[in-house]
Image 1 (cartoon, rainbow, N blue to C red):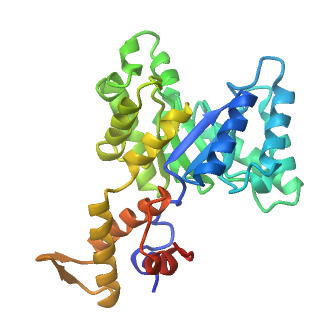
Image 2 (image 1 turned 180 degrees about the vertical axis):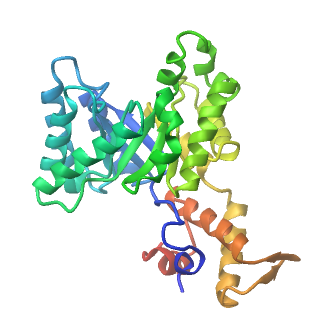
Length: 329
């Protein structure tokens, strides 16, 4: 039997989506990002930005451009989403109507920024699904939520528990700004964001809420985009210390360092494959591997390592690739 069927009950395994979410909003950068995804494969998502990417007064034209890109041949893998305006913004309804009506089946996700509390998220999801039904879709695309306000952080466990939510991200800069100067600007830097107690608390709350509800926690941006080593170091801390399984990119140079940081090492992957194969051979009973005892608790951990390798494009043995992911490699 497939490891997912044996090791996890319904709802206990998080969605399997790429570890990197790349944001862009200017037309030239959006097209370049889609071209890069065609080149690298679906190892990262592209999120086309209708919020900060849209010029003031040009929101309607911008969302129509985004819908055209979603429908184009450049969206080969179906791993392109869009960030809409906040629920209380005048452009939210038009964003959702255009994107879902014109490109609903091609959207990998919609990102909802700046909810003030749980009720905002509930109303936004209801509005998205209402538009989907009006256009003969069973429901709208998966919804991602960006936690940037005190109220949304307070409600993050309830937000993560909503069935339509797939992933929750942390909005570092707006969250720091919401403290009205009480949190220093240094807390937005590549190092300071991991050290300030209030920012650390927010990151940990979001991660814990996502893991409680089997959703994907997505780490915030690193604005020092000309320093790939700093980006990779931040991604490694996000993954290894804070439990994040996905991270934002805001520059193409950040994509590969993020993917590398979230990928298991060759040694970790080899060990995971050995243990899961041995577990299958033992019909998932406890085993002894290199003088260490393993049972279903550790099998779950090692299966996650294998899934992470698959999401980051690491090569698997052809037999494992075929048996576990339905494709040859």
